[in-house]
Image (cartoon, rainbow, N blue to C red; front, side, top):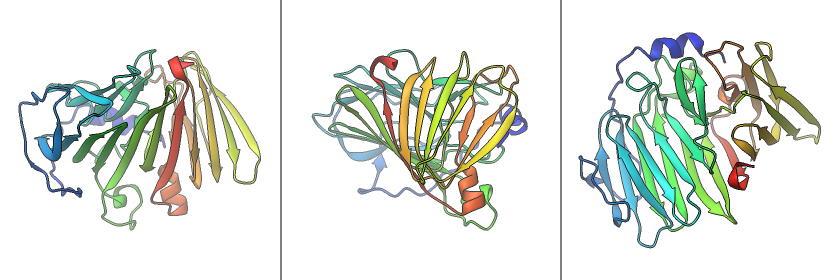
Length: 293
């Protein structure tokens, strides 16, 4: 899906502060609104640490490998660090209207955050906004437990993407670990993946029937879209982010690329698996090369 007009419009809007209900194993209680939690603080029960523009709920168990490094009050973002490997995960939960940074999850395995220019905004690799003119993140949970960093971002409704699909909230949930020195992210829900096209990226797909397809994207690749059904493995050789791959059960994947210089990333989209196939939840298992290569 080409998001140019909607993202350009979105960057001028004031962030909406819609508050949604939270499904959690334990009820959240009021927490420190000044976000002064020490990185190593043990927070065994979920606490509310922000309410605007989204309700953010945080917990951290003892002896966890991840630390909450930073809460950014201005940018409405969180940085978590895996202490043994120094891998970081940046989580942004507001729209780009205030700081030109869109919502989503940006891993950094050592070569800088995996995020790029997308219609005038810096946009994370894992991007959960499917309808930028209306879709905002309303709830975020960040739970640190042992070797796991668990993140869930939700807001909007399925109806926004596909009328008649229901008023349940859209979501992207991620379980993030580091295994044998490699970052691993298991996601559920619907979200985009935005690899770099500067200087270039090759994507190899394996389909359910065993057939394969390869595409290379650069800053000069012509504008276009392509739909591929029943993809099971995606392998990405990204000249900027490094190599990563994922297994998936997506029923319809979309490539969307635009040659406009306002973009140095391209889209691998999941919205058409809902629109065209009725698939409401896609399960992905990402593995990233160590040291970006």
